[in-house]
Image (cartoon, rainbow, N blue to C red; front, side):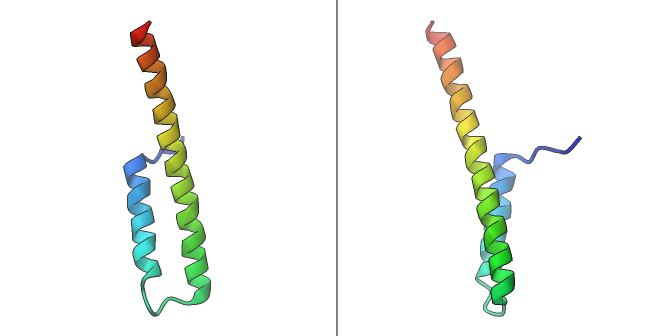
Length: 65
């Protein structure tokens, strides 16, 4: 079974990719690869955040009921 990466870990990976994108010696091809990976990671992190928000709302509604 694949390990589910935590939100914070995804943000750290995205930050590392951003640091790589700032390297002046990075080729255009490598820049595009890192950029695409970073976008993918940020979308996954956003999905995790949205899931947490929905779960929080469900739990809050249960408490209020």
